[in-house]
Length: 331
Ligand SMILES: [Zn+2]
Image (cartoon, rainbow, N blue to C red):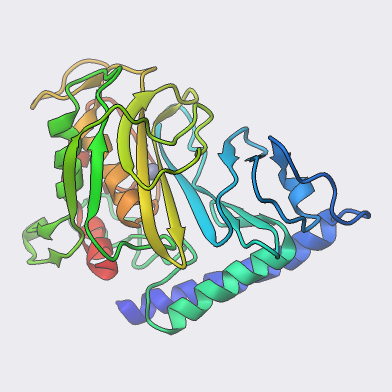
């Protein structure tokens, strides 16, 4: 399992590198270092290789990211409604001197030198056995409909080396949130008992308290300025996005994970969900999968990590086989 996962990652890296070379030839500007400062720096501007110390980057899909510190990657991980269209995972890596690399669902753009550097570092971590890194290390097949026969999962480019200490901000909550979001966090921890298997996960979290701090997730679905506190909360997100998790990592080690749940939709936190509401515990389980380092599986999969949720999808509260194998591979 681990061997095939790493092999898949390396194959994916090779594909990505080819794509990068093609892209950089296509979009490299004639003039070096355009105005890469201030707010809403575009990906086309980043492709000039400029060094960016502050401000924000806007992706072609409209998501805005506060520029992370040099040496830091920020990744935005949404869950969509089944009718909304999945915006995909997006990451922004500030390499410092080599500029900023951007990835949306594994498609790279930004400064070519930064992209090469990020991919080389990830490949090094894979080779050193620190975990797969391209966000594309799918294992198994995703065709089976049953959550107990589908072994697929994907691993993102970070993991935690300690428990996730987190706070919750109930301001504006559309359903009682503390118990439901905590259940989502703990679904991935300890002895999982998924599908009759004995799998033990060392992924761990500690809920500290409620807080007045707000999660650094923006209404565009991008990520704001981190404060080293992992916080869950509520607010506006683009139509079609139920929730977004932002994770900041350095050298593949996660340091903060914030979650925003959309106030645009009706939510349920009752044991038996009913009506045109989204099940908070189920969606929170998905978002915590992202927080711990799992990416999306195929839309057709019946796993927690499928990219979109339907109203009252209470099945998403329970890990499927691929979900459990994924968290076991990472922890
Ligand atoms: Zn997601």
